[in-house]
Image (cartoon, rainbow, N blue to C red; front, side):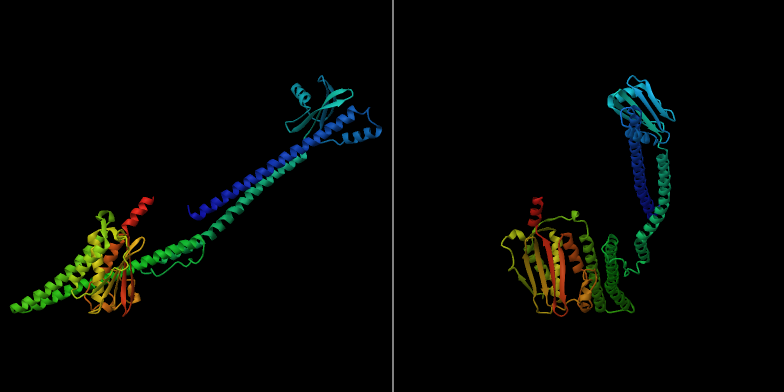
Length: 465
């Protein structure tokens, strides 16, 4: 069943229940009011009959005539009977059958007045005191006119209910169609979006209602998908280029070497060149392997409490081995007095790789003889490492791709590298629940900031729970 039909049925069902209860209440209270009103009229007829029959010799001529006039204003199918205290019939008048059982007489004597129904006839029995003794007066009638009106009301309510249901079902269907029109529009727009049209967005995302919120959420998801597809495309393009270059060079060298016999020195030169390209391929393969290893579940990584300043010194030594001419200005002026704030929980090998990659990039892209500034600090919750170089910088349109494996900005194509360092560093830092950010200006330099949660902060947070 479609949502439109469900909404229509639910809408009609709720309205039908409300209308049914409303009609039932109207009919019930109308019937109750009719019954109570007619009992009062019958009771009045009982008084009028008793006054006319029993007090005719006790009142003035004018009062007797007034009682007589009221007595002859009979009700439909009226039947009036008067009994003595011993149960013998004193007076009877009117049409119809009215049987009075002895227990009813006793009840009237006890309670003074009773009201009950006998088939369609309503009966009022009351105790009437007279100078000749106490009498029991029964007055009864059939409220034919009001019962007929009540029957007409029942028909009107039933017909009105059925007619209203027809209108409600039609209105509910139209209401459901209009209510679902924005969703139908969203479905139509979503069906138009494919892998080649990820730039398309849902149009109904500017409002404040739930559907607009859904459209905004879906558009954000499309933003992430578009970026992921773009990063994947960039990764494949750059990886293919980086892997193809050394392979092409190796094949070219071998083909040229095999074209004719060569001297031993020439073969040695070719083998040395191929060895260098093979090492380049090995570095690329190792970089991919490291990224894969760093992407595993953190539960499988052995963690320990580490002094971040000690890791930085170890990374500094490793970076100098890889870049012998590198110059680093390490600033420890902002270190906290409490050395425990420099302790992080992590894997020493992975964190060492991340820090070395950042330091090596700073040295690689800085002009010869220029120092790269390394600042280590700690706030109340994090250990912060900032590495700033005075290199060529990164263009704004390239900054969004720096964490894509094998991506290299156009202005650093002439510098040796594979575009693996920063993506690997980002993966490692995220595994340690940290963050990495880059601020760069072309021709001015780049600042890479690493943030890692303090181990002491994690322990305090756990203890606070």
